[in-house]
Amino acid sequence: MLVQRTTAKEQARRLIAAALPESFLRRHRSVVVENHLNMVRPTVGRPAIDAGTLAAILNSDIVDRMFRCINGSVAVSAYELEALPLPAVDDLAEVAALVARGAARDDIERALAPLYLGSRR
Image (cartoon, rainbow, N blue to C red; front, side, top):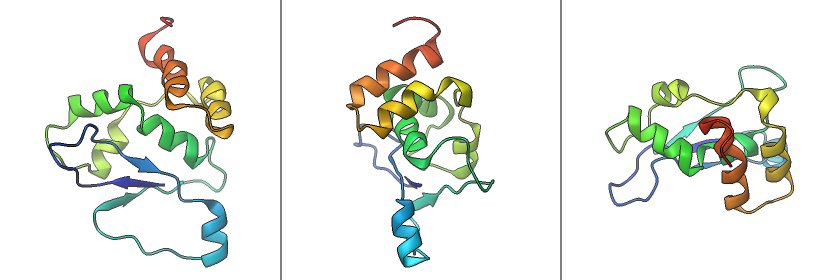
């Protein structure tokens, strides 16, 4: 997954993430990433959630607002990404299913809200 490392003050969001398709990596076997991007890689062979789901979580408004609480600059560091609280993997089945079927961003936001805000829907 790639995350924009440097943003502009004018940008609506600080966190902008995109999954790097596994098919692309298999086909080309490597990738070159320029220095304005963070590359987020799994630390285990089979991650509990896929990169698309993680990118959708990072691209959500609620996680962007949390990120802004721990970061006062336009830079996005690996340290701050690691500090972000993420929902428990067991709670992400609905979000992962929405991402897998290409659901609208608003639907993903609604599924994430109770994971961060409690049972409100």
